[in-house]
Image (cartoon, rainbow, N blue to C red; front, side, top):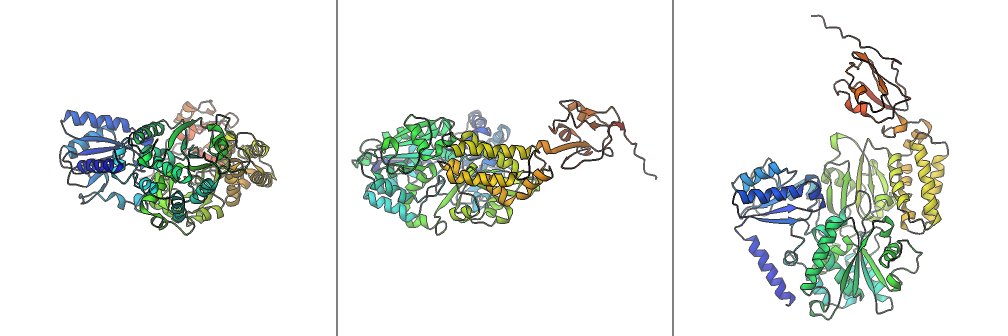
Length: 640
């Protein structure tokens, strides 16, 4: 069947569905939706629709990005704007079926927003909400909107038009289009994608390879996973276009095995593309043969590095090798190879479909287009976002993210995962682009963005990220193997209250040595969290070392708990819950904590009735309290 016939049929089916008198419900069934209870919601909808004899189509979709509102559904009734409902339970879902699907009450009290023409009283437009108002969905254009397990909806919404155009162009013309768009690799360093493609295209040899790096491993990052789960066809189409442009007939997707849903949907998508003649032999009757294979990784963070990734595909241990030669010269099995990440590939089809100038119209002069971020940590609206390059950190945290929970103060933003750095609040108006983040000491990375509030200890957080990179080091080169261990030991001492004068200077010296001498990007960027925390939060290191004080009250060995005699009522709750029996005192007695026995677990602080606040948590200071239990003072009654 010709692609034109396939496209016309898919569009006809889509229009029939859009104009159908049968209502439909889209259920968020990405990993985030399922983890929040999406499967229970789907089962409830199926049961309620059957019990009430309602004709309705249930469609599974990926993540629309509002992870904070999962489980999430979109109810589409003919002739009305669709309505989004979030934070659902099976009970609330049953109410929506009864009140809106069977009745005519859209339940504004439960609705997040509407989409489409028209309005519903009491419900705002979804894309007028602050969380979506500043976003521009290019890479995520289909996520949450179409069934990711069916190729026809993708085709009906413009899918494979970019490939169709590319196959009608010369290979060099396709590469020039990508160059002109300004698309930069979204996996970390931000190298211009078109230039990278050109290197591979110009490399001599008849056999070339293309790789999609889906080995997403940063703590707090879920951009690639959500994109593959919500719209695998856009990534695959981008890979096919790139393979054609560079002259490769075989492409690999290297994906971590911990992403079973993404793998499942990729396998299904590849099979459907092959059945439609969009992958495999003689694509779109063009005479071009391209095959895509999936390689599951075992979860090694270092395999996100290009040369380690290729070693893993070849069946060797995932360890980096020196460069040059670069992959474009000698990559997979010694052949010219190009590697881009999931988000980069997903942008390629829409660039070919709408043109390079259209894409270059977004972003800044040097950082074109949009960028996906996983917004995580201490922020009210966590989720997957896509914003134009050049947006400020302030807009992301306070407009899209809705600010910090419980009205607490923002302390820092970490971008770029373990390889990135901490950005303080005085740089909140920093433009989010490759150059500005690098100037601040951080990196764009693949797009993890972790928000930290006033309760965060920056020394301990730097230790956490360094412990991650140390554990994930392949151990091949001495600077990374030994340097990260030495730095980690120093941070352990500092957070344990055993820091010494000179530790800060030694950390800086080790960090610079590691950056300058490590073999690959993992080791070269591992010191970034330490260096940026030293640059912007040096006072916290000094307080840990010289005052034995953690201002965030986080480091256990620097924290003490005391019971205030004028607040304690002798209820005994703290003593009963203490796991090591470190609290003494009887009924109507002021209780006392034995500091030599206390393990700093904080149980006493957590269980003390809030109206009394008798247990206090301090660092670097001593509170005057009785050494032995004493009777609780009786409160005098006020004279009339």
